[in-house]
Length: 282
Image (cartoon, rainbow, N blue to C red; front, side, top):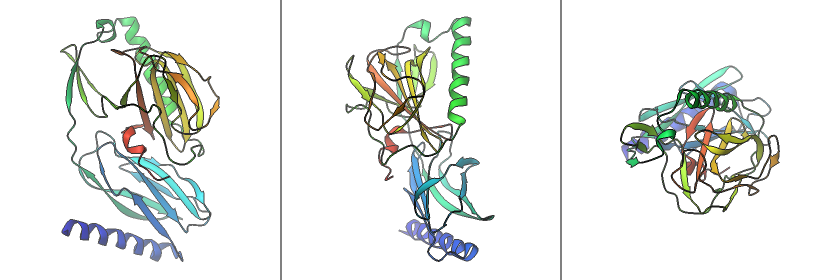
């Protein structure tokens, strides 16, 4: 209860400071949820700032705002896997005036599993290692860009099946290789249809070493969704898709032990827990 009172006081103080600094008549700042697990996404909405684009960051990572109505701006952020638990500050700046908004990141314990995969996909040849590194850099460059807002309302599950391997799981592959799972695996049968989690632009549709047949959709404001191990890609590069459109079929291409969808979310270049983005009210 005491912690709740302190958090409520802190938020009230923040709003008061904003009203004092920016002389807004009805400035309202909402962060939902205000308490998250490591890797979770959150949304910040600001009302009453007229046409001035806010600027904000969390631990040095910029949040990218887009309009959500008259005098309303919205951004989605995340606390990545390397974020320590505790109370962090979202730095918010409008018209050169800055303040801080608290965000609580809870201690999160991630499970550990053991996998056995094709050794050629685990211990790479020099040629495969070079290819994988080139592809990693290509994806990194894609995820750094922030276009205008494309998404339309809430994000949906791209495959309505049971989740298997969750975000943040520590995987010990072939008893030697350690890999942290930066996405969400969803069970599926070969050939099942996979749909776009939200509206956006296809910025990658090709076969990758680890991901197999892979689709990446840019939803704007630094938000990307990633769909891996497809048996077939149903969209082309630069095509515009709507939420719910079929973009591919479930498969087991790339580094996969069987048919499933690896679904990933990138926010400002940082891997976020895909399960958390479904709960955001956008």
